[in-house]
Amino acid sequence: MAEAYMLIQTEVGRAEVVAKQVATLPGVLSAEYVTGPYDVVVRIGASSAEELAATVVPTVQQVAGITRTLTCAVADAD
Image 1 (tube, rainbow, N blue to C red):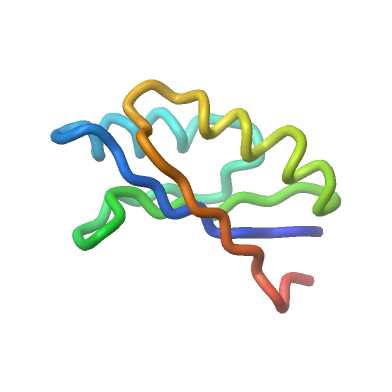
Image 2 (cartoon, rainbow, N blue to C red):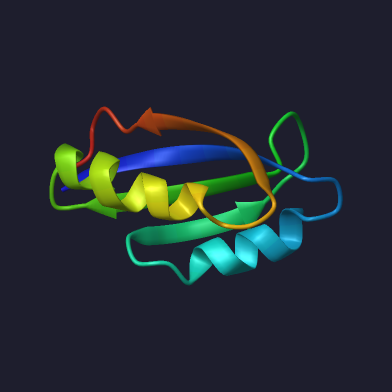
């Protein structure tokens, strides 16, 4: 299984709403709104890195209120 963290910046005041919406998407393992330079941290997973990049990442990026994302692959995912 391929896993990654997505660090998400949102429109002002939208972090909680975005985290709740993202949490319901297929391939999302967890979603939390946080403080700091990013507003939401999401852990995503799929059966392969190709599937992760082709389906899960774009689905998350389409959520209304997201302004920027950074995807970081988990190096030791089993």
